[in-house]
Length: 236
Image (spheres, rainbow, N blue to C red):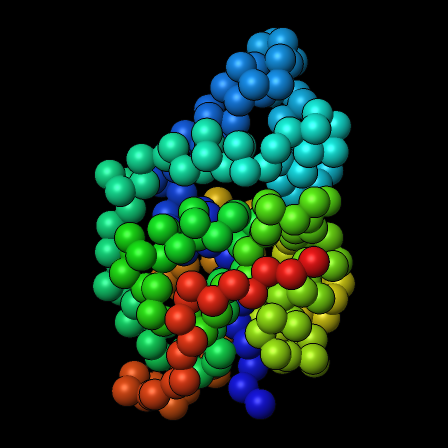
């Protein structure tokens, strides 16, 4: 069986320099204040605590503030002006075409946001599937929780952790995947300063440089059996 290469989406498939993460943080903080009633002076600390503890600010909001995840998605993720920010990435498309693995998106985002990002990047047809965080399921799990990695493996049809690769910008997620036995690539702000993961890069386009064996032989005409990215693979 082919190895499976899992790709995080946000700040990974598109460049952090687009500042989408900054916009998202602002939207989340606005949600904390307007929808949850958290005092403005406490928002930054609480948001950081939830993100560091649960891997996703929304996880903390649902656990401690009884927030409706779908309302959060509408007012935060779906309100981002992605169409004005994300452009097609021909170089990334070329890299994905040459990767000799099953390619799978593994994201903490809800499905509409992830699919939107893939479409704008022009790479939605390069992946065989998508494991996302299903906000519609009560008490959903997400990276770095162990259950989310098991779910991703189940979705992608792989049982052997040694056949799993992950590139992610989150050190928390990278550390969790390593404990699971996955081979990991940390997409860091500065690769020279990261000690997380088996490999470190600071640009997604450098992926073939650290794992060249996965791109050899360089058969860019390789035909793979693809499934529509719209297939719902989220379970709990």
